[in-house]
Length: 95
Length: 484
Image (cartoon, rainbow over all chains, first blue to last red; front, side):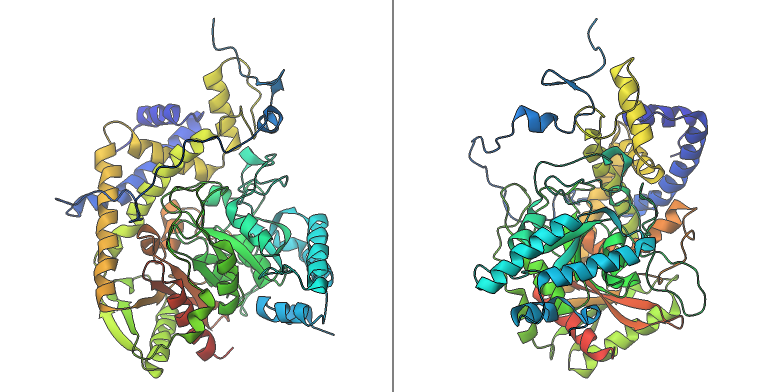
C-alpha cells in the first residue's frame, strides 16, 4: 500500500497537525518507507490467532464508584495557557 | 575520608548508617559534580534546593535512627517523564515546556517514601521516542564514555539517555528510566550500566507521561546489580490508580543472592544471531554463555521463530497507542499554545505542529494512519495478532528454559549524528530489546566486557513474568565473572 499526498493531508488532518508543503513531501516519503518495511508482517500467518489486547492475565476488577480526587478549580487551571474567570479560554466555537 | 566517586547505593547506605558522612555532604558532592559536567546536558531541570532539604530530613532521621527508608539519604535522578509535584515535567518536549504537575507519580512517591533524594529531572528523547537521546527539545545528551581510538562525542542511547549518562558520569548514585521498547536497557548498555525493565504491571504507570500504554514500564538504571534490586524494590507497588498494575505478591528482590545458577536452564535463541550483529558483540555473547556453563548452568538452544516480526509489530503498535495518548496535547488545558485565535481546529493544528518535534510527528502520523478506517485491520489488528505469536514463542521457550541470554544491542554506542538520517536504521537499535517488551517480560541489561575501542557491550537476560529476582541473579553472575 502506498501513500500519496492527499493521504498525507488527510492523516495530518486526523492527527491535528498542520503540515506545510515541504513537510508533506518528506512525510510522504518517510511514511512510505516505514510502511513498506512493516508490510512484511502481511506474510506472517495469523489465521485463527486472537489479537493480543493485554499482556496481563489478571482480571480487572471494578473499583468502588466513589469520588477520590479533590482537585480545586485553581489547581486544574494552574497550567492553562489562557484562562479567565475560572474557565479555560478557547477560540469562539459557536456562532 | 570517604571517596564519594567510588560509592554505589549499597556502600553509601552503609556509610550513612555508620555516620561516616551525611546525606547533605553526599548531596553537595553530587551537585558540585553536576555543575562540573554541565556539557553532558543530562538535566532538563535541576532541583538542588529541594535536594538539600530532602537530604537534611534524611540526616535527621538517620541521627534519630527512626523511620528509616530503604534508600534513606540516597541522591538519585528522575527521568523527566515522571510527574513530580510542583516541579516542571516536560517529557523532553516543547509542548510540555512549562508544565508543572500538581500530583506525584506513584513510582517517584514510592522513592521519596523510601528516603531517596531528588537531584534533578533528566533529559530524554521527546516523549521517549528515540534510541540516541537526540530527539529532545532540550538538546542531545552526551555519553561520558569515549572510544579510546577517537575523540568523537558518543550518544548515551535512549530514550533514558540523561538518566544513564548521569549515573555513568558519577552525577548521582542511581536513576529511574522508562522502557517501552528498550529505553532503559539500551542506554544502560551504551553507558556500561545495569538497566532493568520489570514485568509489565509491576511498577505503576500513574503519573508517568504516557507513550505506549501497553508497553511502558518504569525501572532503575544503576551501577551494580545489588543497587538495581534495591531501587526496584522501592519503585514497585500495587496501585489502584493504574488499572494494569499487578496485584501479584512482590518478592524480596535481594533474595536473588540466595539463588543458585547450578542446573539453571539458560536459553539461547538462535534468531538473535542477526546478520548485522557486530562480531565483537557475538564474542561477548559467547563469553557470557561460557560463564553460565562454568557454574553448571545448562545451555539450551531455543527458537523464537517470530523474532524477525517483532520490530515492525512494535512500530505499528507503539505509534498507534502514542497517537491516542498524545491527542491530549491540545494547547488548552496545559502546555504550549500557539498564537492562533481564529478557529479551534486551527489552534490545535498550529499548537501541535509547533509543539511536537519531527520524530514525534512522524510517529503520530504512522499511528493515526494504521488506526484509520480502511487500514485498521491490515496494520493494527494484524500487529496485535503477530504480537500474540511473539508472546507465545516466549511461553513455549520458557517450558524448556528458566532464563534467556542475548546481547542487548546489535552495536555499541555510536557517534552523535550517525544513524539518524534514516528512521528505520535508527529503529534497528531496538531489535533485540523490543521482543521482551511486546511480551511484557522482565529483562535486564548488564555490561559484560569492553570492545576493542574500550566501549561497553551489554548482555540481556530475559525472565519469566514476575521473576525479577531470577534475572538479577543471572546478572550478578556476569558482574562477578566479567573481571572489572
